[in-house]
Length: 210
Image 1 (cartoon, helix red, strand yellow):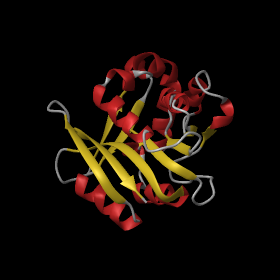
Image 2 (tube, helix red, strand yellow):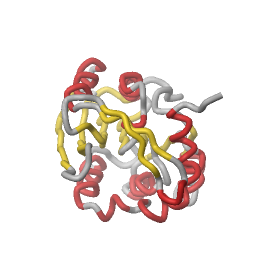
Image 3 (cartoon, rainbow, N blue to C red):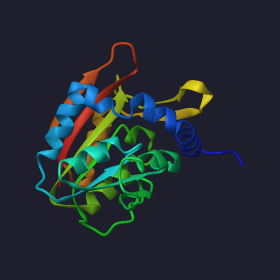
Image 4 (tube, helix red, strand yellow):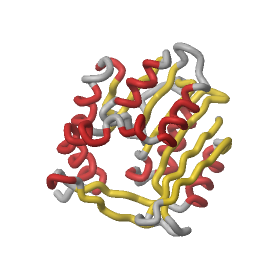
């Protein structure tokens, strides 16, 4: 049976996990904007408040959250990436889980973050509904997403180095993304856009409140 785009993307991340860690594991600390916004997110929480990272990858950001005194947990669909993450954080804080089916009780977390994940998720609305469901009232959600340069939705494949596989991207428009936020019930408290002149996408950083 032919594999879906989601399955092929997961396979690619599994195959590339070790190289990913070497190339980009700590990249958030080298990018001033990424680091500033991540610290801004952390500043919303008191010690031991509970935060979920959806798509934690190799665990570097999760490790940073824990270093800030936050009671952080991470999920990812890639077992290979989580094996790398287990080198940085305790295994009991990691789970294999999709963004569209969060196996947690309602209002379980004070905060949620998801960076560079949702462009891989086909059912964006369901992913946002799940975040809203498990977030406590007045909880904070920080999202970093690749979006399209225009008002249309585009799909594309990105080849990883060393023939590790390909990643499937769904580049949605800013307007369509924000309409889902509104439909689900989130309030946008801030939005920062980074434009890449040499790419077909833009990076958008959202802070949302339930």
